Image (cartoon, rainbow, N blue to C red; front, top):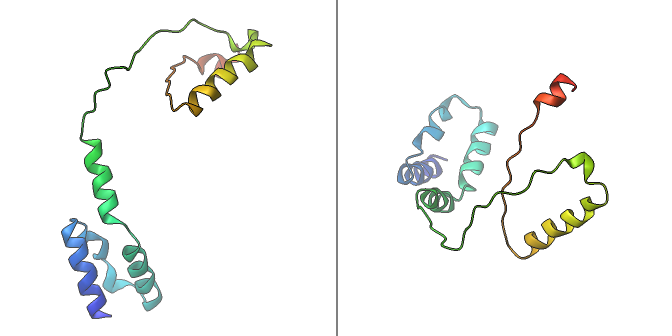
Length: 111
């Protein structure tokens, strides 16, 4: 088991995650094995590469931010399916849209 811990410490040191074994000695045998198993199954390289990607600023020249008309969802009725289909089609085509909405106060105040 000591050899396994040495290997894990080496891996953790490479990714500056040595703290994961900080309380290893206080664990019972069952929990020690479980902790080792969990650490062995972490893909540190993948996590590291994903983290590095968050630091990159990507520019997409075709991206556009455009306002949309105000819509009251309670007045949509028959139009709801129409807009739902537009959204589904956009998702299937790999397009992305972000919409911000004001809300919450009315429902909390029951107005």
